[in-house]
Image (cartoon, rainbow, N blue to C red; front, side):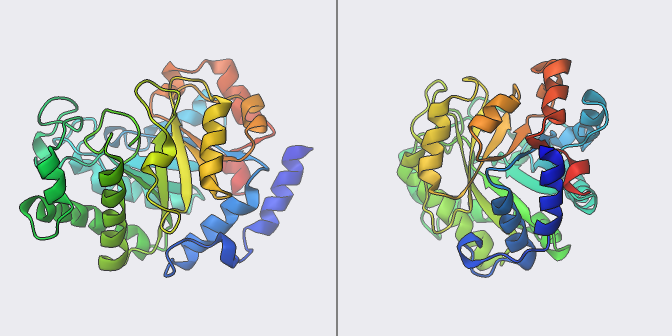
Length: 335
């Protein structure tokens, strides 16, 4: 009965206009961005949307793969990465246009679109970037390099602007198609693995600088801005609030769950910081259970990371979650 009631409720909520307290923080947000955020608020505490990420190399394969893995259902949330590495690699930058084309396709099918960006340090070139090492996503900037990055007119700052402008080109295509995007850049900042990690003050300034560049320079108003941290109970991870850039530019708060199996502490800490705003499971390996989602009832969606839908989850629990009363599939979302 719960799913039938929810579907009937959703049918009436799709056309509901957003009200002021639920509007995006960007005062110039597109009608589509406003409508998407309003819809998420309308479902808050009533259900959890299903979601799936795919590596750039894999295109949208895992969106289709899920249908086979759960026997007939697709996820609501389509997740992609703009990538950072040499062409035709797992995160190849040459797949960016295909990722945009897939986003347009899945939006037409009724899916919600979310993008992330494993951005390279502005000191190196994307074509030569690797995961670890001095030319990797996990390399570090010196104190002086951070100072230069945050100072307009420096070489590093100009290189950063050029990187951002490339991504803006692709995001603009989605705005031109009237597609809202849940945008979660510079994620897992409270860990210690990416170049933007472990620098609370600099991170906040970097995030706000990105917001300003995309919003006020490129006039991208179709973005819902996400503060996407890592579960606090993970190794070498600090509190969410230390890195939070401010409620005035954040629409949604999310955390990635890979190690600690959905601890109440993480949920409570993020909920407290969110102060009523939408919260979500930005990435996960092992899927949550319906019992967890009904207890931590304000999770708006979960998004399983690429192949982990197969490698970290067994058939029975995976299918049970997609069949659960509390979760919503694409077929149910668009009914």
